Length: 395
Ligand SMILES: *[C@@H]1O[C@H](CO)[C@@H](O)[C@H](O)[C@H]1NC(C)=O
Ligand SMILES: *[C@@H]1O[C@H](CO)[C@@H](O)[C@H](O)[C@H]1NC(C)=O
Ligand SMILES: *[C@@H]1O[C@H](CO)[C@@H](O)[C@H](O)[C@H]1NC(C)=O
Image (cartoon, rainbow, N blue to C red):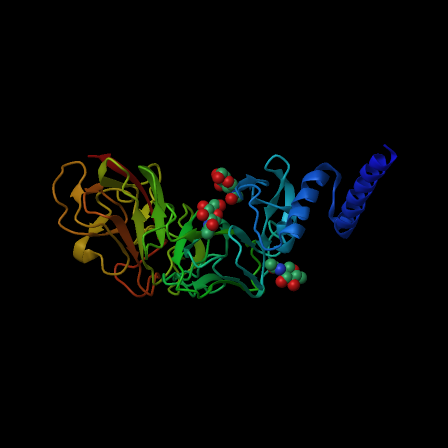
């Protein structure tokens, strides 16, 4: 009897000593609420250091209204230099935000790239870059969400001289952008294992309340959300609104070289915008956004036109009249009449609604090297760009 009690006692003592020694190694990393789970998780790692144990799904967890986190073990979050904002997975995980600013490198999915001190205004300075490496070899594309991107406007001729964002290293050509692009999303194909570099230059000498918060999502080659190769922008859903970069109702306050009101359009654009053809839908209609007379002002003199011209059929130009800045919509018919338009190019100061059944659904945006008044006749004055709505039509 006595010897049985002794063996039970000895067994219990050994377990306790073992537990204390394991616990001791990590004691400073424990917190009260999660001690048990963290402990068994770590014990698992010690016993099976080469086995990766999936304890819970690394799903999104919403944390702050400007950034979402990913549910990770606390140690994983610390290893990524992430910020823990809460708990998830029934308290077993930590909601972890990975946010980086100038001069950083990341290979973490859902990294946020922000201006220094975000959301406070950033005064500018040396070029601010982030280098994005693929998180694994099955990643094909980087989705770049401009959750908040306010840079200074281009000069009056459409050049991003004060502030600019450039994106290089991928297989998709990305134009140099500036101005207000909050809400725009880009899709950039990775070029094999090469990194994609995002650089924001902002002139310190120019006082402007610039800031940015950009979400970088890595998309696997088989991810349903991936854009077709080469599409800089990609829309899904049966209806939506497509804005040109830096589209806005107010004119650029900067003057063009010929001292007339400048443009919001950027120079040297030539990109494709793809729209996923939804199941059961066979054609697509485009119209300029309603209640906004500036929503299709690509070429011509906005200030010299009155509102019988702006946003109307009178202001609309197409075909041979469109050689500098235009939108291409393949093989359209006039929505109202069903008759062929007879051209794919649209420009001017208004847009007549069109429908096309050409597939895939894609439109192209083109501008030339000068958005000011000097280069062309009639001159470009105070152009805003375009805001086009689309509606897919059931088969
Ligand atoms: C956070 O996630 C929700 C749900 O997926 C999404 O609607 C929202 O846009 C995300 N917000 C940010 C800041 O990423
Ligand atoms: C985390 O920060 C440390 C110290 O600044 C750095 O050495 C390390 O590379 C960073 N790790 C990651 C994943 O960024
Ligand atoms: C990155 O995260 C998004 C959602 O936040 C997910 O859809 C995507 O599959 C993830 N990418 C990889 C490579 O796991």
